[in-house]
Image (cartoon, helix red, strand yellow):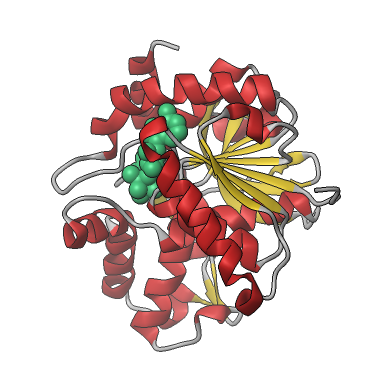
Amino acid sequence: MGYQRKKIALIGGGQIGQNLAMLAAMKELGDIVILDVPDYVNPVKGKALDLMEMAPHGNYDADIAGTGDYKDIEGADVVIITAGKPRVAGMTREDLLSTNIAIIKTVAEGIKQYAPKAFCVVLTNPLDAVVYAFYKLTGFPKNQVVGMAGTLDTARWRSFIAMELGVSVSDVAGTVLGGHGPDMVPLPRLTTVGGVPLTDIATQEQIDKLVHRTREAGTEIVKYFGKGSAFFSPAWSAIIMAESFLKDKKRVLPGAAFCEGEYGINGLFIGVPVMIGAKGVERIFEIKLTDEENAMLQKTAGVVKATVAETKL
Ligand code: APR
C-alpha cells in the first residue's frame, strides 16, 4: 500500500502465468496481480503467496496477489493474457480456436473495463487469431496490443542454431516472421553468429533441419508433455516485451502486430519485427524480403487469415 510501482496484471495463472509472475518479480517490474477463473482463484492466491515468501531470496520488493475479480487489475500498466486452454498431444493450435475465443471475450471485457490504458501482450493460442479477436473486442488502438509468438519462435531458432553449431547462444542473432504455426518463416539469410552469416557456416542440410525443428518446436514439447504446452520460454519471451514497454527500452523483437499494408498484409496480426517502447508497438520494421521469403510470408498470412475468418469478428 502506498507504493508507486508499476502494475502488471496476468490474466491466467496456469503454467505460463505462474512463470510470468516469477519472472516479473525477479526482474522487479512492479506489483503483480494474477487473475484466474473462480475454480482456480485459490491456486493463484497460493502461487502469489508462495512468490511473496520467495522475495527474501529473490531479493525483490513487490506486492503479489491472486484474484478472481477484474477490479483488482484496475490501473494495470501491462496486462499479459494466457487465459485459455493449451494444446494436448495430437492437437493443432487451430483446434483451440472456439474454446479460446469464447474465453477471450470475457477477458477482453474485463480488461476494457478496468485497464483500458494497459499495454496488452497476448499469448493464448491460436495466437494470431486470438490477438486479432482481442483487438477487435476491446477496440484498443493497435499500438496497445501485441501477440507474443515471434519472440518465442526466434528464441527457439537461436537456441537450435547454438545447439547445432556448438556456439554461444548469445552470439546468435536472427528473426522469425509470420504466423505462429508450422508455416512460420525463419530467415536464415539474415541470421548471424557473431556477425558471421549463418549461410556461410552451416550446410543447407543443417539449415533445413533447423528451420523444420523451429517450425515444429511447440509440437515437439507438447509430445513430451502429452497434456499441455511449453511454458518457460513463452513466459520469458512475453516478459521481455513487457519490460521493453515498462522501461521504454525500444527493443526490436518479432511480435504479432496489426499490419496495415506492411509486407503487403492488410488487417491482420502477424509476426513482424516491432519496436516496443513506452507507447507500445511504436514501429513495424519492414525487411526487404527475397521473392521466396515473401512467398512464404504470404502463405502464412493466408493461413492466419483463414483462421481469423472463422472467428467471425
Ligand atoms: N479468465 C481467466 N483465466 C482463465 C479463463 C478465463 N476466462 N479461462 C481459463 N483461464 C485460466 C485457466 O484456469 C488456467 O489457469 O488460464 C490458465 C491457463 O493455464 P494452463 O492451462 O496451464 O495453460 P498455459 O500452458 O499457461 O497456456 C496458456 O497460452 O501458449 C498458450 O496454447 C497456450 O492457449 C494456451 C495459453
